[in-house]
Image (cartoon, rainbow over all chains, first blue to last red; front, top):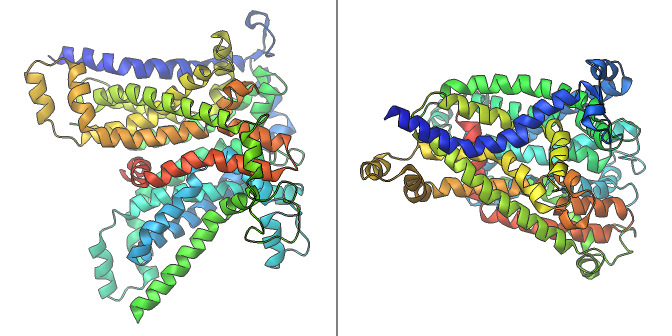
Length: 295
Length: 277
């Protein structure tokens, strides 16, 4: 009986694993192999020269790589922190506002998440327009700048603009995740603390946040993984510019692949990203593994 | 009185979040309604001075045909949703309901696959799609996207399966139904809400997918999805923002409608993974 159940299970799993094997597992291995060859896109596989770790040596000793690495890490740290603060504020707001407004608020929060990142990049390009952009008008109107800022042409502002555009959508998804965690906090605990005279800040720090800590950790991890591989918003908003200021590891790797058609060099970049992501993913999967119990 | 103050404060908070979340979108809608050629005119007004639908007529007309890209997106996302739900449903059934060694490990492996950054697989996938002769075709987009959607949907459907009672399934098995019939006639209808929630998320995810769509379409309109077409507009028409904005609004209508209509399923699906641990 047991053996029969195993056979059935394998048959049910086979199609999904076949799809994953062809479009995820095989390409991962292939990228690792590419990274050991001096491979141009037009070069036939057999003629490509095996160069060992040469691609990695080249990449790791280039200033462009460390520039992209530096920006990717800065971007990730800034974006994840900002998203978390904004997302938590919005999530708490959905529980704090008067009941008739809760549904409305939730619907509003979900909207930015529904917009694909690349379309968002187009939107923000227009919003960041120096002459007639909304953000320039706001910056001048609020007294943050005397003249309309060059959001996408000034290196420092471009970094800020990319982060802001990414955080707009990221804070929405962070808020949605945290809403799920907050919904599990027992109301009677908060009520009891209120009766005992605990102020709102105290209740948040001593009851709500500790109780949703597991959710917070998962959210931070997911968002870090997403930020480390950021591509769309950079590609669409700044194209990595001005110069290479906002080039991320992913956007640079893509250029190596499809602009310079150097698959070997690009693969080395991709594997560096994968190394960072895989370390975090393994930590996550390890953490949830003991909880994956059914029947 | 306190109640009234709370309501007033709530309105202020809701308005603040609305400004943050909706203002960028509102600005695009506003631009799309300007007469093309007036989008660079000052002063800026927070409402339309005159409403013109000319940009919409332009982007739906010859030379642009944004509806073609939207149709491609609808085809791709629908096909991906059906394919991914079928494969993920079968896998989730095995993982959540059948007893065999390594079931936990197979779920963990699927989840690990789901965290792969697209840049790690894009080059070999491009070569593979090319050798299959599927460049610039919709199947060239659909097949990889099905694989990309399997991890999340397997997770959601397995979570749903895990909470279902066993009696109906046991009864069907005792009656000698073959496993595939148990799956399609008993489990699938019971888990319909789980499938639905996963389906909405898969649809939205593949609608917004960009790196593969950009690479596989090769710049040819036949296989351009809405995101690729919008990016093309943005790069080609740097001074025609009324047109670009109209294109953006049209390509966002289906997804925003979907999210607002099925908000509950979306939020539930998104939080299933994050709140369990």
